[in-house]
Image (tube, rainbow, N blue to C red; front, side, top):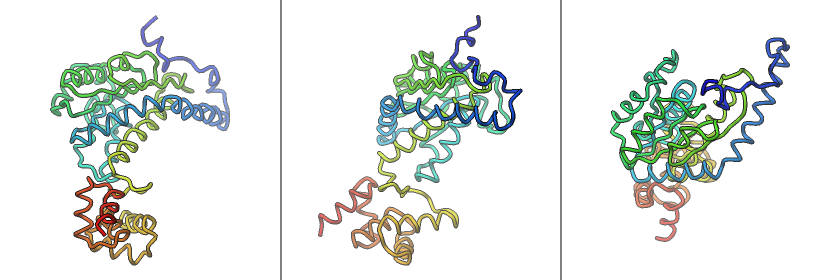
Length: 302
């Protein structure tokens, strides 16, 4: 028996044994039934996911960076999460980075690159990873050499490490400081980890980045107040956020945004605390960019 034959992600799902004989609706039904299990399994691992979030928030709060490392589906999901952080949370592109086996090609995959552990280490070393950084290795099987190589380099550099896999007792989990292992069971299409395993990884990546950014003060209430209004849709979203967050009329929100150079946070502080634009921006600087703390500072000065 090969090593891969023992992997959780390679087992055969008896519920889809006759997949090629099913009607279209039957195929969709079995997929949907299996998919519904994924959030439940993820929910069983929230305590360790919380540890990972706190680790990431601590690193970013100290000026460090978050690196995702993956291959295949795992790497492409990681890249998607990394690419979404600048427009959603206003982070510089270098703050959250994704390293994909075979380079940054998302459309045409180089699946052979995942077997090269040395390349994983070299790719991460080229980013000058250090003690202030945190590296999240992502592999459904928990054994991808490229990812394991990168994690080994990260540990040698003093960075904190997190392993995200869908196999219990994985090599990735054993190599990481924090192991998130979420076995979601056999796939409907045997071995196709872009299905349930990919869904689990996407859910967890959503949690890691979003919850870390909340803890860093990039969210006020449940609004993405560090979003960058770089097109008409986002300009309208910024206006809607300020209106909803302050309870003011749209005209007042637009005026506040114009006064603050479309700084959503500053516009909210301006309207709630009754300060001017310059004062609002200064209060945010004094409070580390946290809207609630800036409002509290303004109120304490009254």
